[in-house]
Length: 287
Ligand code: NAP
Image: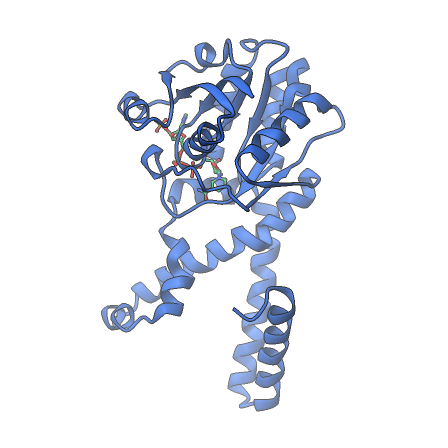
C-alpha cells in the first residue's frame, strides 16, 4: 500500500499508473505535478489524481513514492528539483523509454540519494498522450522492466516491483545497457520505420490515392506514426547509438531485397521471405 504517491508528469503513462493503483486499492493519495495547471485540474475532476502541485520540490516533500513520468528531455529538470527535497525513506522511480540517459541524470542529480532510485520502463502505451488518455487497465498482463544498479536499495526495488504488480504487470530485470539495446530493436526501430514510411508516401504525388486505398495492414503498420513527436525526438536523442546500429542493419536488409528484385532472383526472394516467415511464426506465432 502506498500512502502518498507523487507523479511528476501525469500524462498517459503516469495517469494510467495512478488509475491502476486506485482501482487496485493500492494507494491512498495521488499528487499530480506538471507545468499546465488546467491539465492538473482536469486530472482531479476525472479522478486520475487527488490533488496537484506545480512545484516539483513541494510535490515530492511528503511522498512515499515518486514516479517521474515526463518526456526524456524533461528528466534533467525534474530530477534537479527532486534532489534534497525527498525523505530518506522515499522511493523514486521513472518510466522513461530509454534507461542509460535517465540513470546518468539521476546519478548526477541525486547524489547520495541515488540508491533510492529504481529505473523502470513499462512496456505498454498507446499513440495517445495527456492526462485524458490514461486508463486503469493499460498495464494488465504487460511487462515492466526494472534496471536497478548495484547500489540501488533492495527495499526500494521491492516496493517498485510490488507497485507494478498491483497494476497487473509482470516484472522483468535487465541491465541498463541490455534494456537500451533490446528496446532500440523492438520498439524504437519500428517507430522510425513507421515515421519514415508515412513521410515518404505522403510526399509522393499520388499520396491521396495511396492513403485512400490503404488496407488494414498499412493502417496497423503506420498506427505508431501517430505517436507523440516530442517523446520520439527524445527517445532518438537518448538512445541514439543503439538505434543507429539497428537502422543501419535494417537498411542492409532492405538493400538485399532491392538487389534480389533488380536481379530478378526468385530464389533469393523466396529465401528472404521464407526465412522471415519461419522466424516470425516460431518466435511470435502465426497471427
Ligand atoms: P504524455 O502523455 O505527454 O505525458 C507527459 C507528462 O509530462 C504530461 O503530463 C506533461 O504535463 C508533463 N511534461 C511534459 N513536458 C514536460 C516538461 N518539459 N517538464 C515537466 N513536465 C513535462 O507522455 P507519456 O506518453 O505519458 O510519456 C511519459 C514518459 O513515459 C516518457 O518518458 C516516455 O518515454 C515514457 N513511456 C511512454 C510510453 C508510450 O507509449 N507513450 C510507453 C512507455 C514509456 P504538462 O504539459 O502539464 O507539464
